[in-house]
Image (cartoon, rainbow, N blue to C red):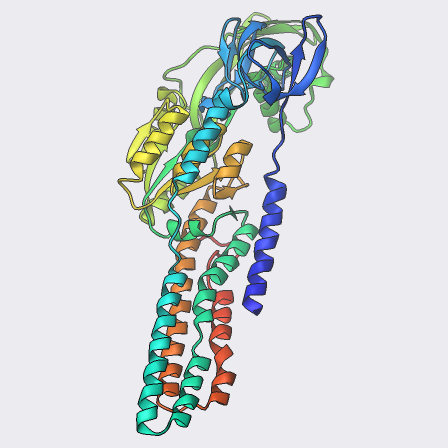
Length: 531
């Protein structure tokens, strides 16, 4: 009872924390009526043909076609594309994308269950329903144990009835049935798993399905998404060539823009000089040309930033913590080139080390991304240079493509794990033997991935794999201890060495032993240590 109480309390606390963490938020939309008025309605109530307004910073609530406006949209959570893409009139956009720059007027083409996101939700449900339930080892062993005990009880009663008397036979049989403890077998697995779930939560690893621990104890293949998983998924400055003064003047001008590249430049200038701030500058005559750059006067000096150009083979940044360089930006001051910036998507700290450690533990690694081929291959080449090998590197994968890869992988490997973030990964996360969602995922992913890591630490995946093996070993040790206890005590009771009263005193010993072993089981390492 003590063990079941502890298990219940741990499950309650974990469930309460997750319910707060995964609380969904329903999107709304601003619908433009025929009389020109604006009405705020829930996103799922939009109908085909409705005209809606999407302001900068808002998520697009439904699939649609742009009627008015030019902007940039971030589709990383939907398509896996790391770089914001232009949004122009007559262009189709997917619900869930983020409008970054300017207001847009859209005509709805699909919403709710008929939208791209709705279809992905349905695929997630189907993938979840197809998941094979984990066979509980405790139930199998416990069922066999009960049958064996009953058979031994009958044999004990019959043998002692022939050798002594029915009265003696009843006493020995009662002692055997009393001291036999199937509850310890039934308690071992859930108790060890519950203890592991509690310790996992302290390590910032939320495990919503304890069966995932057993699945992860057998190495197979780990499919990693790129954008937002191995990388941060946002533009940042990976290299600046020029003077500090030129950088600060450029950042001051960029502070007048809502472009993602502008945010990256301002953040970089602040990082280089924490006391720098754009309000210290007099900024005038600002003119921004869509897709070309920005210019203006900063403290009386003419500053021109642009033109952004695609660079298929850019110069290598001074740091190797980059995943790809997608923009090269030139800075001119008073008509002279004063510097250049390389913008890209940074690799998460410790990504290489974590992947190497996973390979050392017997896992195979695959790269599965919706980003452009050249971007994915740039990251893959960088990782290969560190000694990693991949079972496959797949780029430009749609959510449907990712789901197909995962389903095929499940027929080829003992365990298929999908590690991703973003709504585009939801179906693949649900279809995998174990889905691991990294911080930054959309709400849909978090609801359907049995494991959620709300931190940016990829080494948490390594700890999770080690903990899974340790948990299964802990369960096996508890099984072995319980079976050994029962084998010895049942033999003594059957041969008449244990009185029924003594049996009643010894009966809880098995449960107490399993409880102690479960609480002392080494699952997740202590804080501050690596698995």
